[in-house]
Length: 238
Image (cartoon, rainbow, N blue to C red; front, side):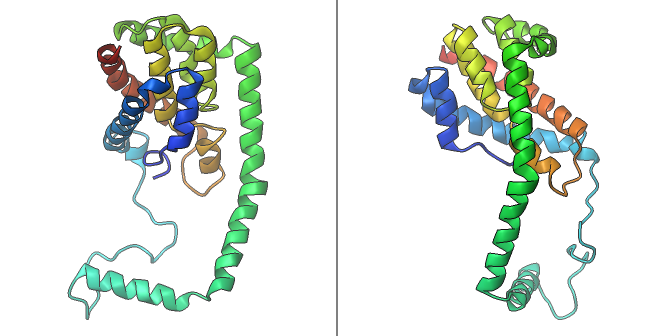
């Protein structure tokens, strides 16, 4: 769910598109984001590393039994029984507030420092070093194959999205002049989804069994799939 079915909000998508000066294309832009998201959701879980994950449950005994327990004629009836049982165990508004405070504290003190640290380091590297220029070079042949204008400049935005979602659009607004290329960067930067300063930091700070290397592979997979969908359609739009 966290690496495939999450989606960037419409409001932040507007911010990204406004950064590259293409707000007139918002309808097509967000439609493409939805299409790419669905395609990635169909493909990514069926290839490594996600396809290699076992269907194990974190809490023993919570998995759905292979057959219905005695006394239940359908899975709906059994599911309703479990739901009622869960409600009976709830302690009311006090438990609700208690869980909310614990989750908030975990975010503030466990996740936010990591997010802020990674985001700051990413911006420093992107603005003051050629690190992401070199890391983006392997995308040059693919961008040229897909006939993306200003492929050299666009390639610089491909890997930097792993650290922060907004940075690619900032770089594109400053260095890319082609509307089509800026549109492609704006879409890709949102559909890559795995950002260490946001979603990635949350995943690494949780109990989800995905490590940093696997997150990077997922990021690359989503980037390549997105490019193969967005670039040809961008040629039709522009």
